[in-house]
Image 1 (cartoon, helix red, strand yellow):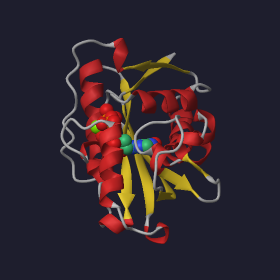
Image 2 (cartoon, protein in one colour; image 1 turned 90 degrees about the vertical axis):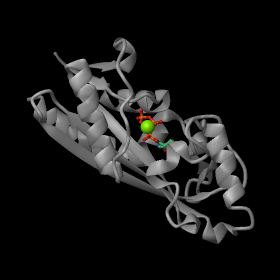
Image 3 (cartoon, protein in one colour; image 1 turned 180 degrees about the horizontal axis):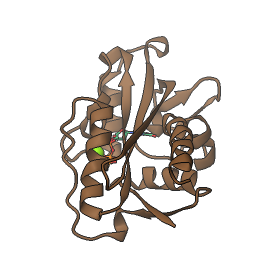
Length: 198
Ligand SMILES: O=c1nc[nH]c2c1ncn2[C@H]1C[C@H](O)[C@@H](COP(=O)(O)OP(=O)(O)OP(=O)(O)O)O1
Ligand SMILES: [Mg+2]
């Protein structure tokens, strides 16, 4: 069976991606199955560029097909920030809690109607022969006034979806995959991968 490495340092992403790949005829590995792999330097100028450079970087270091994810949050009231800098919003080694606090602070005084935002995700699969395949997804929402929910990761507790009357962090993993930016990209990628494996 072909092996695919879920090539991300983010455990939340690993769980969501592995769930979506579970029905494919592939053996799913992740970076914890390897040692001494240097972290990719994300110096691309777009989600697409970063997803591709991460997939190629990890394929080079593992010698296996690698599926990477670059994603982030665009907030309209902040001119689209933090965007590709979402992981480093509150500083180079920022964690999710610090990023969420920074986001709330930046939006003090901004009314709900002006708190529109979207998550974007680009997935890239790089095989060792140089084949590269990509898929993307987007999910619209509103930045809440406080943290709600314990699921997911990153900005999920602040990402409120009016039609669902809850935040992304109040969704189960499979529910999140049904409606999220990453879930959308994963639907496309699993189709592409299914064909590629034939
Ligand atoms: O579904 C999501 N729910 C909440 N927050 C999310 C989501 N998807 C991305 N995000 C946020 C988290 C992080 O602040 C940034 C991704 O940064 P990004 O560089 O792509 O990922 P990362 O550094 O955590 O792991 P890695 O690069 O190894 O895949 O956007
Ligand atoms: Mg990263």
